[in-house]
Length: 287
Length: 273
Image 1 (tube, rainbow over the protein chains, first blue to last red):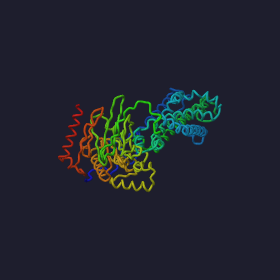
Image 2 (cartoon, chains in turn cyan, green):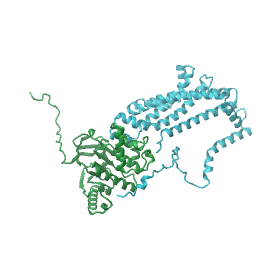
Image 3 (tube, rainbow over the protein chains, first blue to last red):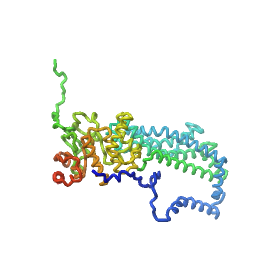
């Protein structure tokens, strides 16, 4: 038989561009849409922040909010940049990062294997499902007094409670990742003669990676939230939360907003970091 | 003293004696029973599938064509009955399976080449053996795309080609194909159909093909297995013996048209019943 269809086979087609999978792989030329659009499109993400900046500035300038409650945006940004460029804000920032990283690592190292194990035995998962769902739905900050009794007013306390909140999210997502693994891939492995263990290590773990990453990303956000709250309310002498509360009490609004912006930037950066890592590691996600 | 002291006390349900199939039978199915939601899909179903032949399974919607091959391949548990491959159980038989949905059959975390080699690695083959077999497969499939890519970077037809290669890699005794073409465009369907025929002529692997396209079912088949509506029985088994390689000319040959017409008649009779 001649090979009329080989032309179609021999060139590897690039995957279609997908807005939901921003790991825009090899050479996908943007389809030339309406001419003149691209420059506009690139500017779009800056419109929101710029509008906020202008509104903020106007509100202060026109005296709608007293300057003692809200500093001009440039002052806050200046304080942020000065503070992070070696000022005392940098130290508090670093402390918060370190606490978040510690609690996240604890949650990830315990949570992922635990979730995968629970997920691979549905009976095991069903038996602890209520506990996980209940404590996952309980705001972790409500548990601060409980953790205070266990760990006292210490640095460990802040890390422990943040790790606890993050852990439940990781366990939940990893377990569901295994439970909802594509049945057909499991069948494909089984029909090729894979044992239960081989199915587990060659299919289930991989299938669970993508939901696990979703879990890790939510977990790091949760860890940051709880660390900041704990720094505010569990006698701390460092960290962004502590800095925000202290600045508020002496009405140093410039420093307070700088710290708030720093916390926001940290959360945003962590989220981006995890999105990038996910696209690198779970390269097949969404395809 | 050769008396059985502890005779079984329950009433013996008479087990029908095992009837082996005719000479040249590969897969023997006896007393196969499967219920779905309390309704019988298969009840006491007997079938002999010949060795070194391609059998196409064709029948009305919902008669359980895919379920039949899935039960034979061990993917769907059976409620009662016996399925033997040359007298052996499934456990001792090497099989290959090609899914309709290739996207969810390949492992996207492995490169295509590792996907194809996966069953060989499961068998514990050495690197050299795996490489040799892969080279053979690449040559016999005349692969023109980059196997070092990930499956999702390939076109649908390339992915299905790769999953057929994966199924054939361990030299299975039986190859199951569950509507392997229905997610492909016509061009790729033709291409893979030819490849399958070539592989069959080289190796003589027994193949069981589920198809919803009658032309395709007859074109590839030595036997067309026509099923009834549920509870499913064998409506008829049609032999189609045109010589291979079959080509585009075959599609207009009188014998082909006759076989197709006859299959269609039986099919319509069963649908209306």
